[in-house]
Image (cartoon, rainbow, N blue to C red; front, side, top):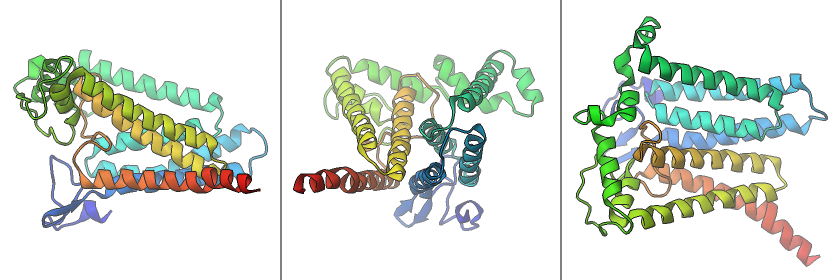
Length: 307
């Protein structure tokens, strides 16, 4: 909260249109990265405590749980939106829905919500593309959706908002099967060490390199899912699924935006992109998962073996 309302621009500068960092000389911290881990812990606690006293399926109890999760989510999402950080907000939405799916809430309640959200999203995109005049009447100007236009037709915006995507596609395509070689890339990609690191992998190591990265990341997600199934602690299981949702969305969004599958957002590729705060937060998440595995899975196996 202090980050958004801070009057000290030297400590809380605006970078790429977002006020999301504390700057201390050469050292900077993005608190929203750590907040995502705390957010997952808060949702895991709410779900585990609610289900602890749940005896039978009851739609009213499911509505109550969904309300609790919405209340826990409202303030952090609002603060992140005020920082003009849409990417992190979308990650939190992905975490929310991922944890809703495994919270025990009835599908009779989940499906209508998903249908409404999907309908609104598709209608908004279609309105932007075919009836921008209606979007203007709603108080949203068409120019604010340049990322949608440049995502769908980057060749028309190559000199402006489509420049990065066009160069990303050219870069990945030029890598071929084996790539140009380490540090032999020639296509200029802004932010290539952070949000567009996958583009560099594609250009320098080709299809083989990108496939290897995807397989490693997919293996990590599968391992996390397996640990969530093995743990007997409800809080630990919910936390792992929430953290898995975070990583999955980051991976899908980051790789997808480099190949024109989804619009561009400022989300890094976990464990590969440059950025201390994101790496620290992800390592904290992995540390918590390893702790859950040690005490709830490995430790109990060893105890049974000793008996």
